[in-house]
Length: 180
Image 1 (spheres, rainbow, N blue to C red):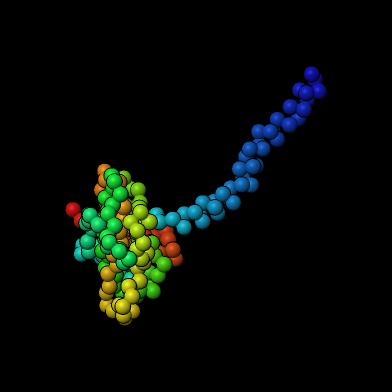
Image 2: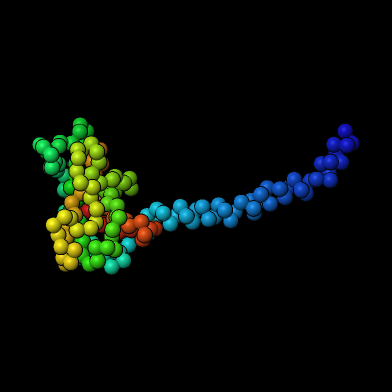
């Protein structure tokens, strides 16, 4: 027994300081991981002016329309109807300025609880993926252009805003509030 007591007595401070030393060794790596995660997620909403316009790196955008629709047009056949207990929402976002500033963007719909839904889900059939660059046939030098995206939400959910994020601008993103 005396041998054990001596070991504990000799190593008490080492055992007490071991968690502190481990935390100090791991902290820089954990901090870097957190910083990387923070930079790759939309966290900082940019302001929207009184007319509904928001600016993001040389491009301006505003929400023109956000309405519930019964059917989604299909380029290959009859329109697609919403699955049971869901509702389809159509958003129209107007862009102005430099279209290259919003290349590779993501458009999402945020409900009142903060949950986000991606544009053009596969449940609505084969649609073109909504992007933020001018649609085919629109001159790249046009002063403004509109992008339409469809979202599928549970019937009990109501939209609060349309979000536009560009990977090169994260963690900044544009949050365009729903009318009313």
